[in-house]
Image 1 (cartoon, helix red, strand yellow):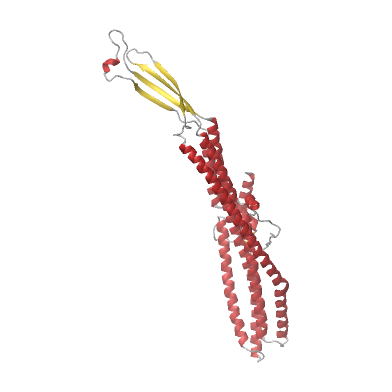
Image 2: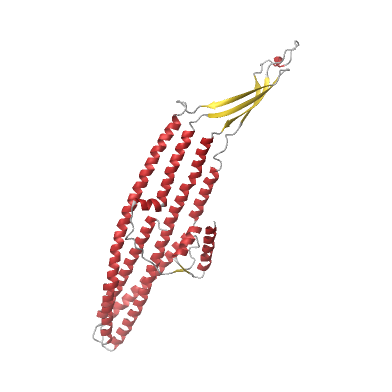
Length: 418
């Protein structure tokens, strides 16, 4: 309870600060989703509904009452006391009966109903896993977009330098005009790309705001610090997914519910006892009378137990089907996780090649061309070509980094990393 209140306070602070453009970290976004997303309320209300219904599991059957005439002659003259002191015929009766609860049956029903909400609790966690990792996807996409903006802004400065320098050289008859127009066109493309990226960032912000159940247009920024997780030592076997995946835990709870339901069906075959009391008021001086009887229901009789036995057998096969479904899903998750880890490892090696070899070499090439251009030993088109190679490679590196982070989100979603 205290944890929920702390999270609520935290999320309130996040909401209050967002309007002024606060920089949010991923953990703060996740905390807001866990507390404020409508799916939490949906599942919480459903869980509360089931828990409230379970409180009535040990209730008694309602009592039954009867009243009316008993063994009364159709001739009203016989109701009265006769001249020879004989009593009248007929009686007015009131009565009631109550079936007595079977303690074992009540306990079986209570165990079943109390366990029903456990499935919804796991489904709630599974839904939150999807929402949290959707937020991670938006967040990491936003980081890559911001890094691309920085690259574009730096490239815009470089192109501005090329264009101004080319104009001066052309006026002085020292340069060719072709590369100048090419640089001007590329500057326009960079500005267009920048507009597209800024629009993509707005879409990511809207997506995160929606997940936090806030105004979609609330303004905030994100922290660009990120971490690439190491999954190389993680064993993606069935046990891992059984212990981490909420949807598999929900199937486990469903299997347990099936066995509990079987027990309620077995207990329904037990004899049921009851008691009936009737009181009669006699007509025409007849004495008051009563009857007190015990009742016994025998659901275990062959002709009355067919439905219960059929349900018990049906539930056994349902449990087997759920177990097979759980094993199939765990196997699929394992294969997907290993495939993603393999792909992620490949892309990380490619990233290292870009960072250690390709980009430094292209950057040195650009610096060399830039120096030669300033010393009038290189043409503008050579400088432009070296810049274009560097620019495209930097964007390619960022795209590759974005793919690594997407794979990380996918693996986190699979193993339901908290």
